[in-house]
Image 1 (cartoon, helix red, strand yellow):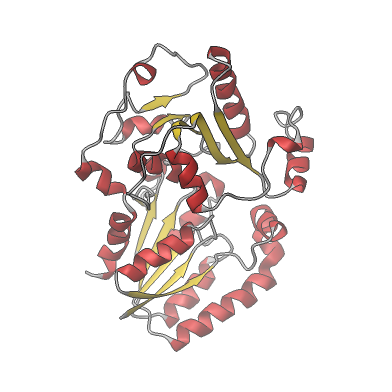
Image 2 (tube, one colour):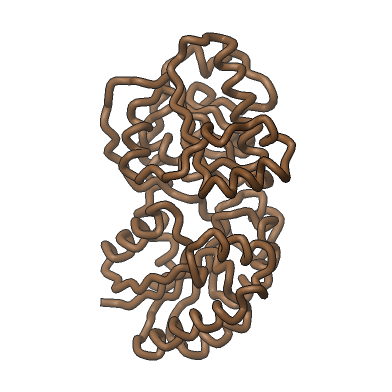
Length: 327
């Protein structure tokens, strides 16, 4: 059995599902968060200036290095690696001399520009963002994935569904979309789940951003839905509303889950038009207004060929990552 070092953010349960996907391919996987802690304070400090947690990160990284000295890794996969520096990757490469190093970004480069230089220390670097791929020669293109491919045909309970983490930009656009929908028919059933890490985060947004000034803390949820709970809601919903963070043109995982589940989606992401699975019957791009006479609202979902859909499965994603290691 081959050994793999996997460093990635804790993102809902997707890091666990990704770990399992590699284990299903025969790898013994050691997983580490790409931050020295999972608290809101640690996350905020890294975003503000990673130097503020330099000592804590260095101590955390020493533990990873010690583990790497004990094992012979064939593959090192780093997703984002937001708290780690180029020098740390240099040190890790000196230890894991026989491993292939793969880097993956599932946030836009604009969110952390130093990842461009960071990518130079890997044998292969990928981005999920098609615009970043076009703009940065350091990265190849690899979209995100869906995990579940056996969605149940449940009775529809919700006409529209929002399942997202709230933040400036996203909150404003979702509010606009819901206003259009309610104006068209105020009797529609809407599942609106916008998550915030804590009421302190809401208060921060309330004080610092204009769009949250009229928001109420009770509009938001402060406990995450589990992966199975969110899938259950997805199955019971007719149309999903998707709004990536500002500056992001890469597809969200929610978009690909809709592809797998055969669900319609309203999205603010215009780059959906570039993908081979785009059909106007299935995806509506919101750009400031909604035309309810559009084909999206008038026709049933158009099934996507299996060979196209399977390109976006987690199994195919893992195969792409492993293709370098197997050469």
